[in-house]
Image (cartoon, rainbow, N blue to C red):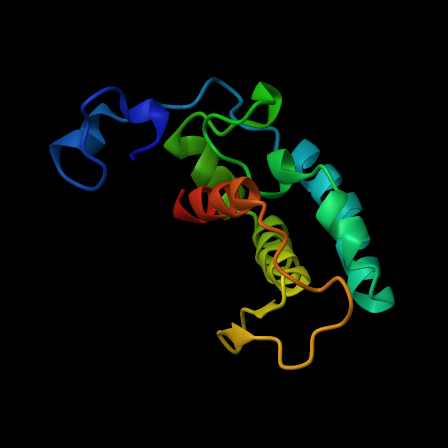
Length: 144
């Protein structure tokens, strides 16, 4: 489905629908706040990978700021417009950390994003957890 800011019945993409896209609020998304939370959580991700404590990553509560979407349960972390998306994507540090977070979260599930295949010899706890909601949020965030 298209992001919420497109409105009911809008078609996602270019053309006339793009002219009806909601513009962000003055000031837009708080990139500094996203980056601060992201950096802290990304360090936890890295530690989990280094130590093999995959369950710590699996149990974490980080989806809202690590993989922002338009209708998450924490409104302060929701993306509300194309302007918000462009502001985050326009920050090279945020974008690089976002991509690394996707790779590390997938690695915790036993998937190698770089090679596009399962991890050959996964460690204990490095496996799919059947938390499809987290995967869905990640996919929706990547879509935005």
